[in-house]
Length: 457
Image (spheres, rainbow, N blue to C red):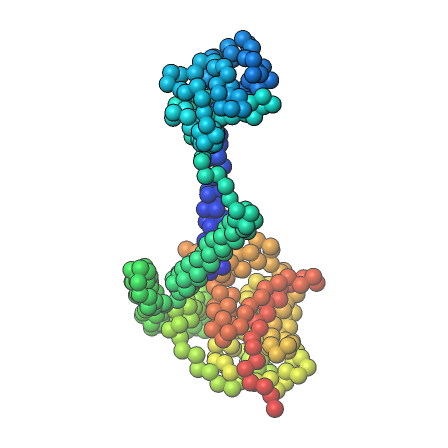
């Protein structure tokens, strides 16, 4: 969900960057387009420069030839008025211009046009120098005045308007983002749930209703597939039980028949042990699939874990252990009366799988320590051995939590450790977590941590 918010923010930054780049591009385009026009109209031939040049080269007596040529080259005409408004001399003036001007005439054309010619004036000691440019070459603003209050207020107003616009844009962005996140969060959560193979049902209206319907349909399809897979495994487990029991029974009879030859009895023993292995594997597959698709109801009850572990260890010792393997039970401080609501059968199954893993992977024997510890309100059941341990590659494979359909190879060997996968599923079904580590002194330690749901009195 947070990543989607970052996605929107990243695209907002991209959008803002595009706007800034577009503004810069427009400025560059404007500069390139109007460079020549601005350089010409505001260069040497500009009214300010021409007035400066002409005023230095002229007086009431006339204008120099060099200045006259410069004016002609730029299509500029000139005339000089004395203090009485009489035209003293001219240079290239168009036909139709009067030779005398009143104060009113001077006041009007000095701020605008003379016979539609834009004119510019320069006051001198002896009179008034007037320069005229071709028609439609310059536009003059006749009402160019602003009040002081306007000049003082305008920058503040522009700054305030820009700040308000920016705040409004960010407010609109924030509201839009919240609205989008409110509508998309359920979709993202549903997709995450689908990736964990959990059923979902979305109820959305508006533009995203079609997306919600698609996710709901995908969820129903996945649920049907998962149920079909679990039912298939359950059916196979049920169908294989009877013939497998017969194989085990006949193999046991042959193994115990003293009249059969020793090679035949040994082969019958191998058949019986491998049949037991197949039965346990099928049972594990069935249980893992039911836990994964939440088809296995948990029969929760108040269980004192110390008593459960003692009962398991007693049954294990009574069942017979090889001399090269030993089992020790350690009940930590404050855990003797610790009670948890759980399915006792499944917890026993998880502990048993861990112990059998230690026995199976250490054929030369090992010491197994089964411990119950308490820390910060959590109960931890750990199974530790001092055997061969796990390689880093094996630890990585086990941490990836493979699907149970990928946990055996064609010879029914536990390629990724189906027993550990079953332990993980049982632990997670009880709201706990499993951790695997290689202790510094060697061996393997698997810890199952649960939240203590019932406090001892």
